[in-house]
Length: 253
Image (cartoon, rainbow, N blue to C red; front, side, top):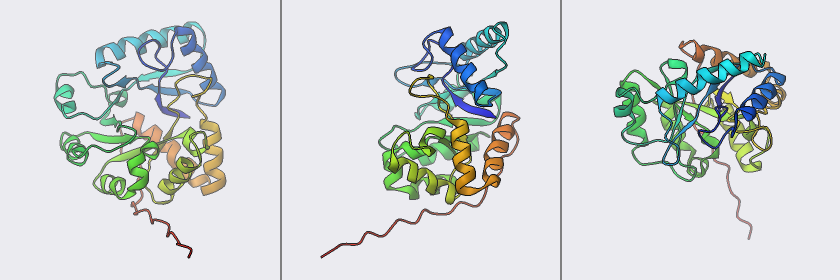
């Protein structure tokens, strides 16, 4: 398996605190059958992780894992919180796409979607990049207004679900919305967003077992292959997105 979203680089955000934490995370990933991880440290008001520093950290961790004989390959990535000047910073070579491909993570705030999001997602595509909205299932506005996400996907954006969301670790409501996103072809990747091995671990094997039982092996292959295609910078597999039908609420008199 390939994990395209992980906070395994130590000491630079709210993920691994020490190099030992990074090693233990890599060992846990290997136990789950993961062989490649894209390291995606935060870029936001709290953590200022730019491309140059990320590349240095990735090289250092790969060297350590090689010495420790942990058979995990770390690739560079980044998780930028959405902001208006992201394309200007991309031009300054401060934004790290996923493994230097055309794919770029975009994170929304957890409780809303900025009004300029649709235009920025469009502008990113005009620049020749493909935005991937991370963990949309954990955004409270998207849960209430899934038509927003449908509009983004219909216009070319991709999305990535968190494995722990699918397996219920973020609660029933988020799990149900995650299932709806798969049913409506509104998501294209499943990744761990792992921060540690205690309370924010990988859960990738568990998630793919759930996907197989709920949707069948075709979906396991779909998400697995899309991760491989992303790493190679190739076009991913997409089905035609559908709007999520809101469940009717019955009023009892």
